[in-house]
Image 1: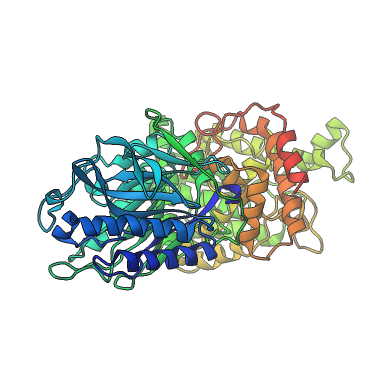
Image 2 (image 1 turned 120 degrees about the horizontal axis):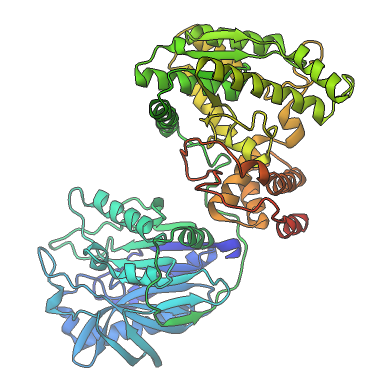
Length: 633
């Protein structure tokens, strides 16, 4: 329940038709097991206290009294649990009978939610027994408690303001305009569905798509509890297909025919963050809210937190993602070349990872346009820190991609510049480094002017976030193809290109992947790279993780730290994560001025830093609030 995480469950207990007392005992057993597992919110099947398949027994007074007694037993049996649960039963109100969800917590009956849409087609004949509940709004007494019978009410947790629960029943989800739409627009972040969905061929996949899609459309968590074994199989079969989804993704589902419990940790803070970002998620009319209380508790997360949120975990999706991203990058560059009428491109090729990806994208863009690759000019500009490995790889790459290569040494030009400004060659300070970066950019821009070409930028998203670029140096280009590609993904894109490339291109791409990330602005040590970026600013996989959760969801440093600890699983000590998180926050805020004047470039993912579309932040914004929380971790 801390940091927005709520453990929820969809539960199918064993049951017998019309055995209300026995079904109540099974419900209490499962509720207690769920509470012991740390579950805070649980949903049970439709009419689970009596059974869905009672038929005309629903018109029997004995069954209806038994259902009320069963609910009383569940209230008594769960009053000591830190658990809010929804169970199904028939409820009388005047001359009508309603198919209801009873919502209860700590022995209190919070409310009754009647089913809105009553199916009466195919194998369903519910109108024979139940009245539609969409219009009913009554205060009634049940189990000795006064409560509200109304489909249009929400249940709000006092301790976790983002935990607001809405309830609908089975068919309500399958109609064109489910009640959950109004519930979500009025604030429900967790939706519970009590269901008795009989099984037919192909129905499981459709049911899964409904739950998955509704959670995505409504930016919510959706828990679906299905009737299972124990229901009458006179004409139908029920298989207990329980599902939990969050924002378009299935977090957990049970195997059919098992009567199991689906359990997942949902993140209601993340859901609210998504809703705030989506200005098309327009809040609806305010609905009555029934408060309930649950103690805050911190549990070891069951939820899988990927250490590389920008990178799919399985090989198939990763390959699909890489192919799509390269197509987006190349498509953006191809459109820019076509629009400007420019038929040549200049790429500063260092032999490092980012410039290699920029060359890959440029080659694909020229192929898409049917332009000869000879129109690409790769410029390698050896300086004081260039090693034979990176220079050799630049030469091999240019040859393998069949592009023109030009070598423009910058050492003499930079030495003259140092003499002009009074910079000592022995003082390896920021001026020593940045002068080389600016000289390289000047060379690229001037060559592009001379041959009528477009300078393709090489800097990536991680470098933009950290400000790891020289202002008006490698910070600038005419089109920045890597601007929304984080460093962790740059590697996979290059590896993907290597995997589908023939020799010798494959070999040189793999060697680029094995080269330490470096701007190569300081003299090498015994011929090897002496300036390794991650030794200075920290591991890129940590910074990419911080960046994703800071920008994508607006999470606080405390929550980012907790997620990172769970994701990295001991690969970094806690103090190391804290240290680099503070470094990230300081650099992210202090380097905004570089991002405020970025060149154009294609957005390919949900996180980007373009000042024109994705990230508007004043360059003099203070980081004090974020750093204070990070210091207090």
